[in-house]
Length: 197
Length: 86
Image: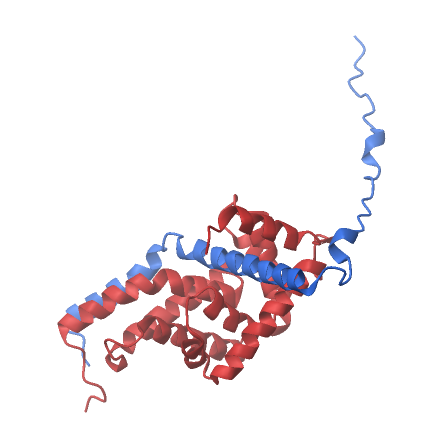
């Protein structure tokens, strides 16, 4: 009668352990999708719950991070379709993220980056985040987004170009003040932070 | 005793800030430099964006996880412990 075999207790314990380790990453991904920190945590919690409920369908040994990211992303888009008016609110969401940052010492350049990211179309943003920050290969990102590898590649490169353009030109404004220096502060920060790579 | 604690505090400074009209010509200088240094500059910028992107992401990753998250799994456990079916 059961559609899926339940996991053996030992595997269930492994699964849970791994799932707990992934929570911070799921939160970070959700934050980039939602903008708003509270909505992001709700989304991430839903994803954790869904992942747990679906544990029997997970193949131990395969990429669990990609699997959970896919669950979170699907959850995001199904909710978005149902009730969220997020699309046209990307800019606003980015501004709310700014407010929602808990770390008062977060460098200004990070805020600029959040705002600029918020201006990208969501499919470009998620591709860039997965590959550029989440540590996924193009193939994995393609699986997560349910599209072709080439599509991910072109989204990522378009996102990179667009982001640079936004940051250099200060195409958005913040409190009416053009953010023309965003790229400069990001460059300065990178120089300070990045070791040889 | 005269009670004149009200001195006008109109400061002439409350007017306008000096407007900065920075026309950054060093930065926008059109293709004067050779193309390899342009490419280099572009790569530098992309690298900087990459660093910042990861930093932004990692900042959230390193936040402490709210208790709610662990409660979800704890609840899942206890549900099973009380003879949860299927």
